[in-house]
Length: 131
Image (cartoon, rainbow, N blue to C red; front, side):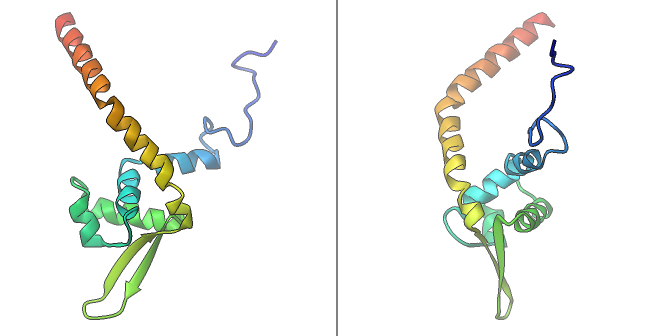
């Protein structure tokens, strides 16, 4: 008899901590990754432009996110000569392929924000009544 304890775990299962696909899901599901990729969907941008557009992100977190996305091959960093030197960020082909799934998530979020807000309010009201 196979139970949940003896069931073999398939290689590539995102439920396993060592699964490469899980690391990719962790990356693209990151709060700031979603916003940076969405911001770059409109085209190349400089660091300062991204920092202004994405409210609430610190310069340190934006730097870390951009470096990780560059390492993962989702963002290309281009240094433009001049004084001062300009650096622009652009989605790579792989990064660009995230546009459609992220657009679908944004549309889902917009369509369901009212339902989720109502559920949160009902939950919070119920929690206050219990205390």
